[in-house]
Image 1: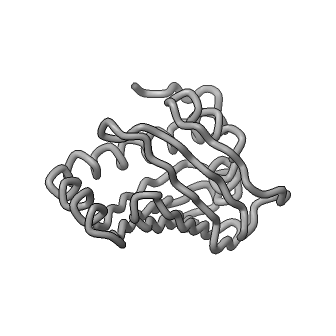
Image 2: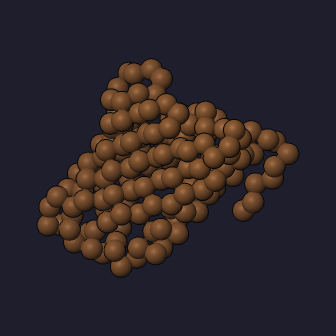
Image 3: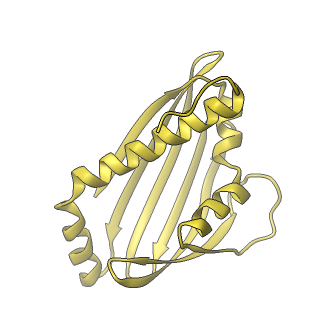
Length: 160
């Protein structure tokens, strides 16, 4: 199952990339949402090979995910590969395109591939709620864009 969305952000590529790769902030946000996050590497900066272990509740079950950056081209591309303990492989790509010196298009794409029969059943159940999942992804990416704009320009008010 593939999901994708994009948003135009009034900030340069470097600023958007820095916000998208502020992993300490992202780890704190995940923790506040009930996700246990553990960093598995000691790499500095943003580069391929950075890894995390995540544990969270989804549909009444505790799930575990191992995520790793498999490709990083600063400040244009960030690609993650994740394997869920229940047999789902997830690919996430974050692509930044400079539309103007102070405008960046952020495109986020997810691709979920089942590797086991139970994973196929889980993905099939998600397909029926695809619209809601795409809407949530779009809302999250748009909120991220508003936050980057507000951090860059404090006079900008965050919309709900």
